[in-house]
Amino acid sequence: MPILGRDAPATTVTQLKISIAAAGLNEIIATPGAGKQLWIYKLMLSVARGSQTAITYQSGANELSSAMQADVIADDLVDSPMKCNTNEAFNLTLSDAVAVTGYVMYQVVNA
Image (cartoon, rainbow, N blue to C red):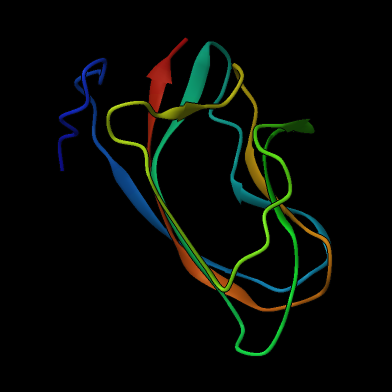
């Protein structure tokens, strides 16, 4: 599936299921390798009904967002993707051990 964002490189977009429940750092997408970056285009997250947790997006151990608390998070970043640092994994940090499910759409691009 091609991405139509302004600066999108001509590479394949991958969609990955998210299903986590551990408090702390949870690796969602592994490091892409030397000289590569992860570009995140879409995130859809749902927190278990009746539960609360703060969710932080991270590139490796570096925060890409502040902690967010919501039942559903839907980020459409096609025109301005969230970019991880070179050769860093995309992680979600949960403040509490709560089931969080959803999906992420991303590309691996040359840095």
